[in-house]
Length: 394
Figure 1 (cartoon, helix red, strand yellow):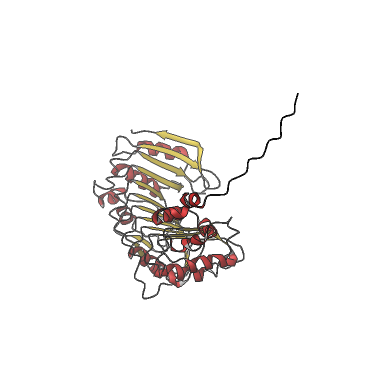
Figure 2 (cartoon, one colour):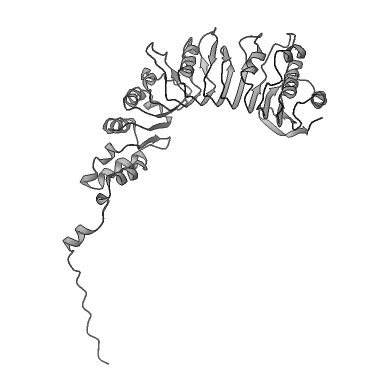
């Protein structure tokens, strides 16, 4: 059998310059499509597009809508790199978020905030990493110049005293402050930040701190506020003003600055909410804690709480004034569906659960759908589902 002749390798043809020119490429896309592609990328990936071709070298710098986001895993983005990116970016900054800012970058935020104010930042999130032996950083004064802000979230820092020229945040709809400190008389600055944000819809104040021993009364007043959350060791003189749009309120305060606080007025300001979570204040056990429920009810009309459907009372030892408060809510809220009572069993003066349950079951309820859920708190202050009792209308 004769051997087959060896096969010749097929020679590759030279590329056709005309065909190569006709092949589609990224550069052939319309500019608006290219901008859309880049704006969907993370800022690090957007910057890397400069290596695609000469035409792309600086395209990201003029692409609007790029989100500036860094978190604790962004080891490849040292503060100097963020400085350079902000300096080269020519468009307004829509979103700047740095989660878990390390200590070495604390001082660099004093350069970023003025730059962001100049670029009209719309959403600003700064969460400073917590250290045991590192002073809490005070933000740069330019934060009050960020007038294009719609969202502001701060965590683990001090807010400086507002300058006399502060004109508010006219577009702000979201303000969230967690573990944020204010200097002496800072309650006035906080009041101004809220009052001078007419479009504000969501306000979260958690574990805020105001330096000083005495506090002036300050008012939360916002015509468009829908969601309010206030959690702190003390109220720092807090008062609730006109909140006509409020839908949900969560108020957890360990101690109130005044033992003679007018809770009728306080509750009246929250009367239109649909969901209410309210922590009964701690009072001195030696004070007379009896409340005249008839007088309390006489101060309010039957139209109080016209939308209220859910109430949560937490950390309560169920003293008589607290039981009066619960009875008052049940007797006034005509649309109430559920009232959750979390009893604090760790208090030395807590009333026995059995007596409280019997009393709760006897309370008159304005809503035929109202159900009361009774639960205890565990030793860490967490809500426990181990011991619970549920009963409907009587």
